[in-house]
Length: 375
View (cartoon, rainbow, N blue to C red):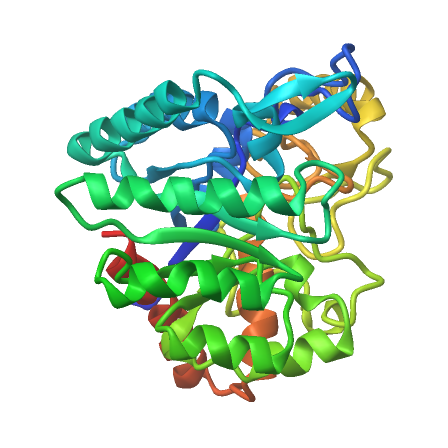
């Protein structure tokens, strides 16, 4: 049997309104919900597993529905993101939140624990998170709020009778982050996990590796030449990949973009298909993947164009609609799980691996890393 890549995108935000067609807080949808199309594109290019990340208590429970629908393909996390702890756990004060915990904070933490237990027993939940510290965005939650709730969420792990990996968030807070985690590691409460979307220094990387954590890399981790140097130092046996979709796309302005090669290639093997393009198409294919890439405002125009062409072609042959110019589109500036292979390609090249057998081993290893932790 011939080899094919297998990808495990460890960070997907399917609760984000962009997948429902709503952007930048707008109440007018630019396109219908297209999660099914997003999933189909991912499966077509070997994204076999996805971890859906939760940022709030509500999301933690709602993700069970997707996990039930896509058994053995989707799993989820349970936890409250550091940028969400203020709105979730603290009393409202004018347009912001005070440093005082809500009167029902114990009930909310109990609810979070119960969701974690239910999700673990059902097999849906494979990690506790996204929890941690984010000092780059203190306008969402203050340092005090983040530190207090990081500890209180970790305390939940002392109240359950099973061990579960952590899905961790850390921005510009490495020393405090480690100081909070260390007692739980020393007590055996925290055994493993991943620091996702890592953007730190080489010194911070080594501190996290010394604690035994895996490192998750996405487009935000690969913006600058300094980022690339740090990413190249991550041991392959401690590496995981993610998109953090719909965020953290790899942009043309990123230092890493030059390492991406267009489809088809080792990371995106050719899919047997009909013609991908037309003589004078009204829309363009993505630079690196065989799907249309359009502005969200052009969705209706593209679908009308595609439908007319499909109807005209059906008289002669079955038109190709899985990929190519007539397929459902990617949206510019919105990241998707199908693009996780680009992260793999960049990291492979940063590690100096270019031969076919080396590339295959690299892709297999990072897939196995994720399966081993989120089993």
